[in-house]
Amino acid sequence: MGGHRPWWEQVVLIAWRFMKQFAHIVTGKSEVERIVLLEQVGGVEGTRRLRHSLERSKKLDAVFKKMMTGNPETASAVEEITRIKGLSKINEESAQRLSSYVGNICDVTRFIQDLERIQSEPYSSENPAHEAKLEELWNLATDNRPREGGRISPEWNRIGFQGKDPASDFRGGGVHALNQLLYFSSTRTGAVRKQLEDLGNGEKWHPWACTGINITSHVTLMLKDRLFDNQLYGLDRETQLQRLNEIYSDIFEGFHVDWIQSNPKTVMDFPPVFKKSMEQARRQYKEPSSPI
Image (cartoon, rainbow, N blue to C red; front, side, top):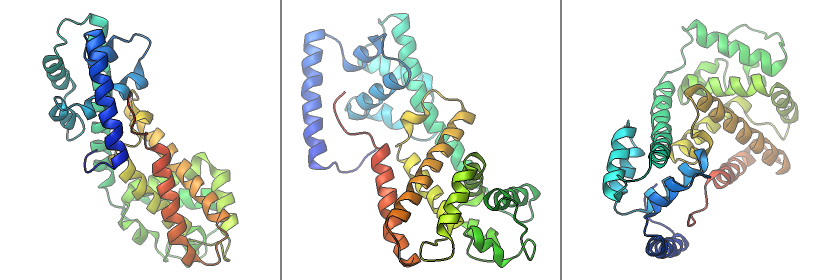
């Protein structure tokens, strides 16, 4: 969102500001006004265009930062944009579009805040609900294979936990990491079992479950960097969370392909392959910095 821009983004920004000024002179309307006047542009695309405009606007910089952090208020942001850009005379439909687009941006910010609260819940072996999810993960991943040794068992290594008690592996990701592993396993059970089959116990092995916990961390960082905004605009909370879990599952599957294709000789090959795969995922979801 902030920080130093690479030189090519600086060039694009200068070109965009020139085009913006030219369009303002020709039409007599600000870019924000032109965006909300476009009836054929709605929902995600209109929100995307407005966000880009606000992000690059010097006059609206403070408003934009409020919308992207904390617990922003849609009505307050709309009021400030209307005042600064002189939009008090736009028609009712355009005013509604402005409110909708601003609301979409603010809502993703609030979703991120909500998710941070979910992520703060640690895994507890004393919590029956947590334990039930862990058992469900085992059953889905192993096709209900009996586990020798009970709850504390070296068999957890079969699905990629590092010790006899998986609870220790969730210290970094909490219940949220378990939830994402469980979502992946319950919605793409065949793919999960095929991954574990591919890994086996030989050269291609890596700790599958711990990999999933690490992917949760990377997906969370990408969410906070606002790389998934376009995927989340206009959705209710439940659907936003489902969409995030789908993105997680896509990235997990993408990593598995990268790992197998890298033809690893040992688990020591894991770090560079994982890093490259996560960088590719970031590039996939990062919008090009270009004029609207």
